Length: 582
Ligand code: ADP
Image 1 (tube, rainbow, N blue to C red):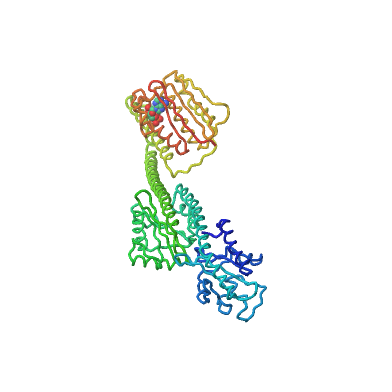
Image 2: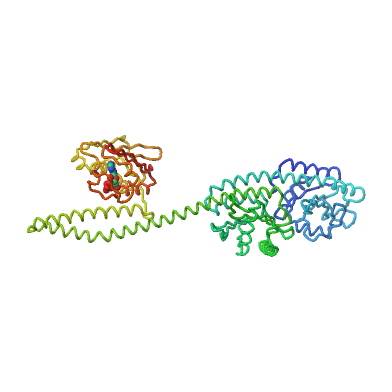
C-alpha cells in the first residue's frame, strides 16, 4: 500500500505515540518508518521541531541497508544502539543528523551520528517498522533508569503500533481493492488483452502494492503461447517450460478456486513439483523479484489464463485479504479475457468473409471485363449487318435477335461490374455532401419518357430545403435510378409513384412508394439476392437482370445506411432507405 494513502487517524495515532517519546522521555526527535513493498523504509511520522520534521518526513532508505546496520547494533532490550563509529553507510542516508549537537568522543555523551532504534517485527518475523529516537535533551546516551523507561515504553507501544499499521493497511487495501475491481470490471469492454492490461495495470499493482504484473492468456486450444507482459515497463520473457508449468498450475488453481504464493523462503505451493518450483525461483531471481502471487483467470468452468503479481524486497507475504481480492479479480479479468477472445474470433471471421467477398468481387469484375470487348464487337458487327440493304427478311430478324441478346448481355455485364465494385470492401470510398432532393428531381427527369408513356403520376413529398447526405454521388444516382425505375416498371399505366424525403437528427430517410404489382411474401424473402427475379409472371414479363436491388443494398451498406421495404401483392410497394446526414 502506498504510504501516501494512509488515513488521518492512522497518522494521528502514530503522532501521539511519538509525542510521548519526545515530551515524556526526553528526546528532541522521534520518528516512525514503515517498510513498503518495494523494499524501502519510508519515514511516515515525526515528532520534533520543524527542521527535523521537514528533513525526515518521507525519507527513504533501503530495508536491506537498515537490516545490515542492525546486525552490528548493541541490543538494549527491544532497542538497538549503533554507536557513530560503527556506522558504515553515511549517517545522513539512514536518518536525519541533528546539526545543533557537538560531536564528542565521551562514551557517555550522545554523538550526532549515534543511532537508537526499535525495530518492530510482525508475527512472521518480518521487519515492518522502525521507531527511532534522536537528540536526547540532556545530551547523554540513555542509560540506567532512563533507558529502562524507554525500553518499557517501546515494549508497551509495540503491539499498538503494529496493530495500527495493519489496520490502516487493511482499510486502505479494501478501498484500493474496490477501486481495482471497478477498473477491472470496466475493462470487460476492452477489445484486446493488451488494452485490458493497459487500463488495469496501475490500479491492480497499486492495490496489491506490487512491483509489477503480467498476464498469460491461453489460446483457444489451451496452448498458452499467448503471453502478454507488463511489469513497470520491464520485458518479461517466459520460457516455454515456464509457460507450460503456469498453464497447468493455473488450471489446477482455477479448479480449486485458490491463488498461490511463490517465494523460495515460503512453504511450497501444493500443485507444483520441487523441480518446477526451482525453475520458477531461478526465473524470479533473474527478474529481481522475491515473491509472486499467482492468480488463475477464468469464467465459469473454463480457465483462460493467469495473472502474476510480483514484489521485491522483504515483504514476501500476501495477506488473506489480498488473496481473496486477487481471486475476485481473477474472475473479473477472466470475463474480460473471454470478451476479448470472442471479439478476436469475430474479428477474424469478419476478416475472412471480407476476403471472400473481395475475391468474389474481383472474379466477377475480371470476367465481366473479359466479356465486354467481344460483346462490343458482336454489337458493332450486328449493327453493320443490319445496315446492309440486300439482307433478307429472315436474316434481318436474326440480326435484330442477336442485337437484342447482346444488348441484354451488355446490361448484365454493366450491372455485374457495378455490383462487384459496390461489394468490394477494398474499393476506395470517397463520400461528399450530396443533396438528395436535387438528385431525386434529376432522376425523375431522366425517367420522364417512361413516366409519360405510362401516364404515371409522380409526386415528390419533400420540403424545399436541401437534404444533404454524406455519400458518393454515383452511388446515390444508382440507388435512385434503380428504385424509381423499378417503381415505374412494375406499376401499371395510370398508377402513382410517391418519393418522399424526411430529415432526422442524424439521418435522411427516402421512401419510394408505388401503387404497382406488389411483391408476394415468398418473393420478399429473396428480393435482395443477386439475379433474383419475381415468380410473378406479370413481373418476369418485363425486362430486367435481377441485379438492381442487390446493387442498391450493397451501395446502401457501403454508406452505413439501411434499406427496408413493405409490399402487398396487387396493392403496391414502398422501399425505404436511411442514409447518414452530412
Ligand atoms: P430487375 O428489376 O432487373 O428484375 P431488381 O433487383 O431491381 O431486378 O428487382 C428484383 C425483383 O424484385 C424484380 O424482378 C421484381 O420482381 C421485384 N421488384 C423490384 N421492385 C419492385 C417494385 N417496385 N414493385 C414490384 N416488384 C418489384
